[in-house]
Amino acid sequence: MTKPLALVFYERLMPGSQLVNRLQDLGYRVLTLTEASLLIETARRERPMLALVDLVTNRANICSIIKDLKADEETGHIPVVGFAAQKEQRLHEEAAKSGATLVAYDDALLPQLPHLLEHALQVE
Image (tube, rainbow, N blue to C red; front, side):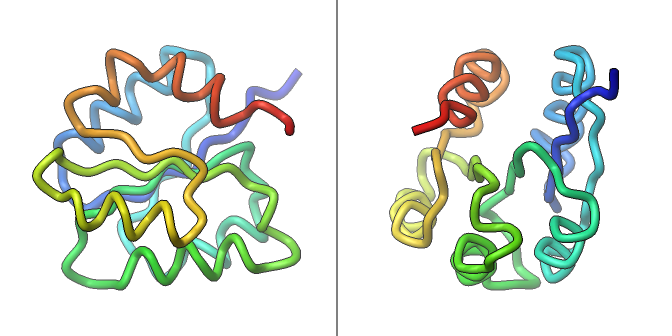
């Protein structure tokens, strides 16, 4: 049986690389992206079970990309978990408005990852 695929976009080494390692420990295959502009195209091609997205980026409007991902017929069903530091409250709010399934604080992401994944993957 193939392991589920998690698509992970991050620019910041921490917590990005730690997240990748933790997902692999939990039994996921992980495909990482360092360019947010590739998120939708990659999701269409690879068909991940979920996407985890670093909301802190200087090279793209990540919330706009999340909105487009959720609006796309082929990718709209993919749960999106956004993450950023607690001080980035504006990003948290904007990601939620853009359609992110869940938004988490960096410091809670790794310790609560199994619970966050379970919650994000619940079928409504």
